[in-house]
Image 1 (cartoon, rainbow, N blue to C red):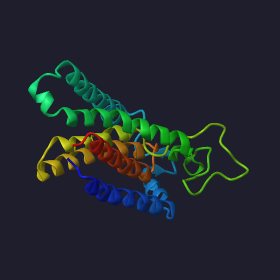
Image 2 (cartoon, one colour):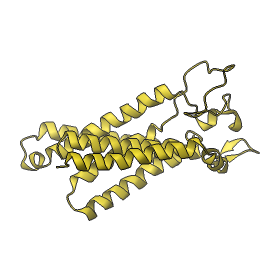
Image 3 (spheres, rainbow, N blue to C red):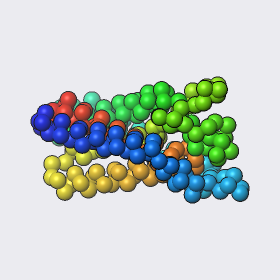
Image 4 (cartoon, rainbow, N blue to C red):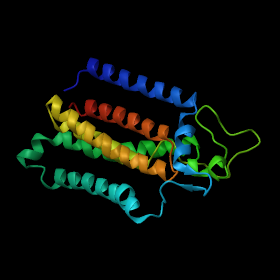
Length: 225
C-alpha cells in the first residue's frame, strides 16, 4: 500500500511535470513547428488521410474497441467470478483498472468541454476557420466561435493512458517498468495517429498522459493498493 508521504512525493513530481509541460508549450511554438511537418501546404492535406481504412482501424476504431472490451471484460469478471480465489486476491487492483478506464476518459472529456480549443485541422493555418488559441492565448475579442471547440486535451488517447493502471497488477519494479513502457507506447501511438490526421497537437497528448497518470495514482491510493 502507498503511504501518504509516497503519494505526495509521486503526485508532486507528476503535477510539477504537468505544470512545466503546460508552461513549455504555452510559451513556445513547439506545437505549431512540429505540426507543420504533418501538413502539406501545397496540397492542403495531412500526412495521413483520416478516411484511410487500415490506420483508422488499427489506431482509432480498433484500439478504442479493444480497450472498451478489455475494461468491460474485467468488470464482468469481477462481478461474475467475485468468489474465485484469483479474483479475490487481485480484486482491488482489477477495480483500479476498471475505475481508471471509466473515470479518466470522462475527466478528459469534461476538460475538453471547458477549454474551448480547436483542433489543428480547424485553425486557419491549416485551412480551417478558427485562429490558433491555447490556454493562455484566447480568442480575439472581436471573434468567438459559434460553437464550443473540444480538442484539448486529447480524448482518444485517454483510454490508452488509463491502462497505466495495469502497472499496479505487478509487484516487481522490473515488471511494472515493462508494463508502463508498453502501455505508454501503445497509448502514444493512438495520440500520434491523431496528430498525423490533424486532430491534435503534441501537447494535447502529453497533457492527457500526465493527467491520466495522476488520476491512476490517486485511484490506487483510494483503493489502498
